[in-house]
Length: 190
Image 1 (cartoon, helix red, strand yellow):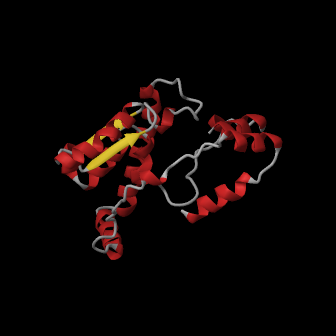
Image 2 (cartoon, one colour):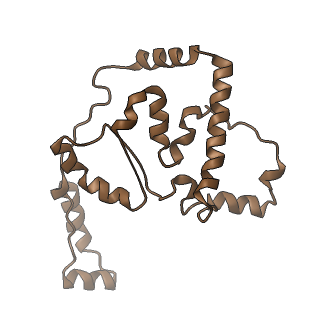
Image 3 (spheres, helix red, strand yellow):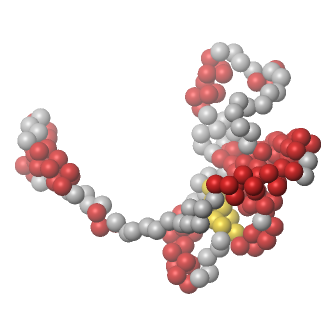
């Protein structure tokens, strides 16, 4: 976002003076809210009305604390069905890569919600009641049992850091790279 802002500034482009147009490519419609705190949950509720009670929402620094305890919740069976988490406290709309990092959250969300409402209205007008039916038919045509099942293996023990010994450090500092062959062969053997 900072690079985009630099480009606009360097080229004297003022977006407020331009006519609004749609993005190129597929419209986000339901995904418009994903960048907002709770946006995934709000979107999921539209398709699965009861999922809000089975969703955990977390943003900012708390995400890492929450995720650190998630395995314990999974083992205890107290975990939610859906986790809606964003790295930044105010979501992506006010993250450190944006120009609006210090803007009030209500201001940030106002424009996203306005865009979401306009997209929903447009889709309802153009598709009527057929859109949800067509969307589910399309999804069902690609669906296979187990399609999104995943199994993970803990490979943490493979993450080892080898520190150079004093002789290897001296070789590194003096530009003698003979130690690299042993590191390279060790690495590729794993």
